[in-house]
Amino acid sequence: MAIDSGGIDRRDFALGCIAVLTAACGRVPAGNAKTRSGLWSQFRERFILPAGRVIDNGNGNISHSESQGYGMLLATFNADRETFDSLARWTAETLLRHDVALHAWKYDPREANPVPDPNNATDGDILIAWALARAASQWNLPDYARRSQEIRKAIRSRLVVNHAGSAVLLPGLEGFAMDGRVIVNPSYYIWSALDAFAALDGQTVWGPVIDDGVKLLTAARFGPLSLPVDWFEIDTAGKIAPARDKPPRFGFDAIRVPLYAAAGRRLSVAQPVVAWWKSLAGSGKPIPAWIDVQTSETAPFALSAGGMAVVGRAMGTAQPDSLSDDYYAAILQLLAHDLR
Image (cartoon, rainbow, N blue to C red; front, side, top):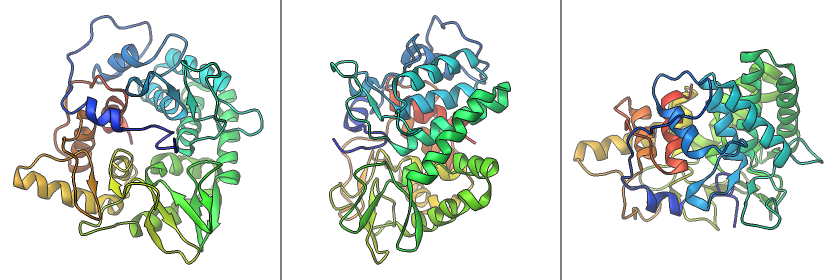
């Protein structure tokens, strides 16, 4: 399976979460989270095992660097050091590679070797590094600061390439630069994290990644609605097109593009998406879970509660109150609620 948002096939998420909303949970496990709502405590109970592993219940209860990074980040947002420490420990002990300060993207408890693929997913590493840096500052923990610095250095040196005149963020170490073209996942540009990295390491280090990333994502708009896609490619001349081996969809990965743009104050990146959502809202039509940017074919089901939370954040409208039963939808809800 090609790596997709940390290696995840989002079909199960879409089919399982059309309108699945749940009431508040009962028992809340031990922890010192202080939240503006009950969302974090609900998420913690449903998706975080005592050992510090975040489970993706839409994909066979696997874990991945993305889920661990999101969990660690949300723990800092909610001042929950106990949960953060358990997540950080499990992540380092289980996913951290021995040759470079990056993390294997997938843990599958059903396999004899639960970490069969050492390849990383860059968004997972960005999230982990950012969360560690936040924890280091929040709780005055130098070891977390050191670990974050090592990961940031590995990301910058191993996952950023100069291609066709731009500094391009690769989705992973292996499999994304071939035949003169580079594959990009626009949802891996987490602007708030990259801005934090620039504040820590300097604009000369991260400025080109940020500035060229904004230019690339602004140019990577396709079809009559000028929407982003989950994956695009750049050829040797700098021409940008939907990745040839992926469906040309604004879908389950690209839904995070307007979320990260809103949180990172790059509103121009999300403008076409917001315009499309507003047109649907004005017509009274439901927002589909995905759209083919070339044919305008849409999913036969609507966005999940997580997707609608992103819509609410990007448009400044109401977000769903109840936490979804699906890991990815729940993550989107929490990010839409807390990400800055």
